[in-house]
Length: 454
Image (cartoon, rainbow, N blue to C red):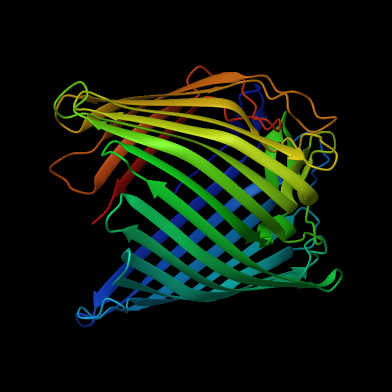
């Protein structure tokens, strides 16, 4: 259970916020026989909040409304894997997620809505030796249905449902005589959505993919891939309506879009990685990995953040081009651990040649952890540095770069397995920071965290 009050943002404003979230998660499994296993998991979430009911108000404390969220997630699975048959390892999963949101306000009629997702997934994994190497085959099917039903005076929350069916197959082959891994596969997706006002939308797609990785030495790996994908809009992208963020005390709300179409894309990726052991000491390791990717998409599902009207929504771009670079470095030793990552992502409307503004400017993240003594205590320093966002959508303002520093202290006792506790000071210097879309990041924040797993 937690309790959260107003949010102090890095632009100096205070976002009105009052909530009492509580969550419970439990899972378990049982071995029926050596070949049969079954399990289940349960997640319960409750949250009572007070937030503005009118997104056009300039003061967050005007027209506050009470919102109650109840979410129940349950999952059951069964696995059959005979020890004497490497061709059979089948797992079936049934899942259900039910979310009910109810809102009440002063002199307002109650309004509520229900979102429900139910589905089944069946997959089998087979291991076999067929020339020219070892094969791991994965194939299966999935079906799920999502529904949203408004009640009371919730006329702004559209009714609708989504049915999604998929069949998939993949062969991951490790060649016997050469340091080469090859992956080939394909996936068939069928999507159908219905809304009383927008009508019915259907789409289907066969999406093949292929990838190869080569390791000419023990320390070097090179890879490349090409894949096509079908991405259906989610219920959240089509129907969400809650607060996206606050800026200067004014809420920016998500606006539903009933006319979203599925996205089709082709992605190409190439990169390399190295791993060096015993570089400076006898027990250290250095890992470096970097790659370039490019995606050509049709009906690309993008996000628009309208700062003038203070609203956000998802929409389709008929032809889009997305490309970028990813690099990661990780050094581990007995004295300290250091992770360093870099990313730059660009997105452009391929028809108009205008920036979409959904990319990411040059961003460097450094994360250092240093053990303090031998009792399981470690100190951490995280720095996030971002360049100015200048490749924004036409008419949107440029966003300045920022440098945000966070410090932490964590405790993982060796004598108590599964226990972890930490305290973190995020944005320690309370710097003004906005992401590329102009959404303010949180100001100075203290977080306490504890976990015990058994």
